[in-house]
Amino acid sequence: MSTTHHDHPPATRSSSGMGRPLKTALLMVALVGGFYLLREHWNHVAGNWIYLLLLACPLMHMFHGHGGHGGHGGDATPPVKPKGNGD
Image (cartoon, rainbow, N blue to C red; front, side, top):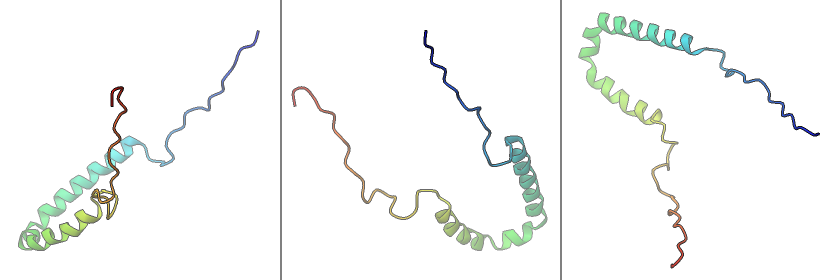
């Protein structure tokens, strides 16, 4: 009588050290702080909105997440056709 016993290591949490509730709490604090900062300095922001718009362009390009330059299909491989019986 031979039975196979598989030992599985116990599941571990991610090594980031921060749990989901803590990340959510920090995000909420940042949002509330940003709201009050914007509320207190609205005259400065409204007077310089065109510069903030121009600043958003390179930031969106850097943090867009499309994999860097060349990720727009320049060297894409053609799709593989399935083999048919009569072809």
